[in-house]
Length: 88
Image (cartoon, rainbow, N blue to C red):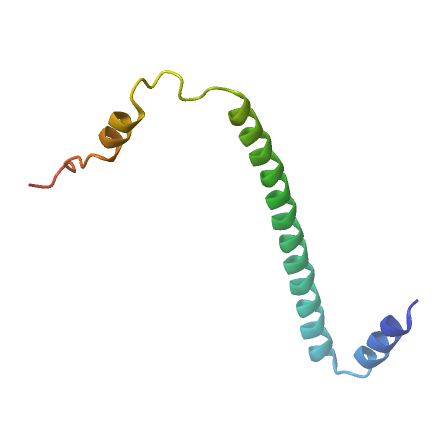
């Protein structure tokens, strides 16, 4: 057992039962927080890899080959459209 662990156990043993229970709750909270952060980091790393693969695939394919006039297409895409349920 490490010195830190021994010190924690020693200090914990000196506390009243109510405070020991509170300490246990806090330890469980910290473990949950750590697991959540680790899981989020793993998801972010996996998403980054997936995104890089998609970008590589997009770079090697000709995604916009069917667009004859890119400027006209861009104007059409950016054109304001009326929102349903709203009067103009």
